[in-house]
Image 1: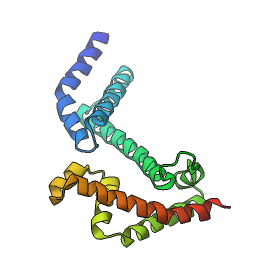
Image 2: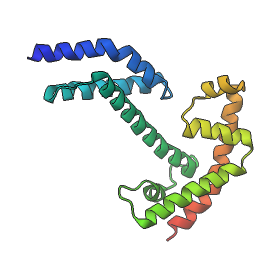
Image 3: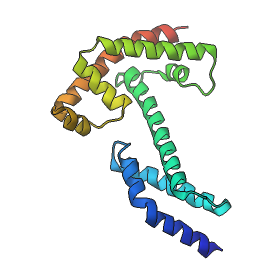
Length: 185
């Protein structure tokens, strides 16, 4: 029985590994993240095969990969919040604000703060020059790499990095006021 299980795992890896890695690479920023996600998928697959058979292996693998990618993006959103509110200073305590925006449970108050934050973020984005706004949205919200944006727009990567930096500085400044208003209570 264990040999049959191992054979099933090995045949799945052989059949799906290359295409699955390509699928993941298109949706994350770097190869290291893609390989980490693929490893997590195979780990979850091998653990599940022990307990129950999977009828549609390919569909299951891609669904797990999508879920792992989504988890990675959620963690990235938390990093974006850190970048926007810390200003690069490690002694700035913003964990209270992040807890309000990404709570474990949802209350009317946290929903209000979250909606207010997103409203203010998009309002601040609208104040930016179109080039800075678009680079920020592509990079942070659509998870495109600077290289992908450069190939799509024909703009030099260094120029794109500079535009995003100006956008982050503006957003940090604008959202700092919201942070101070919310956390002073």
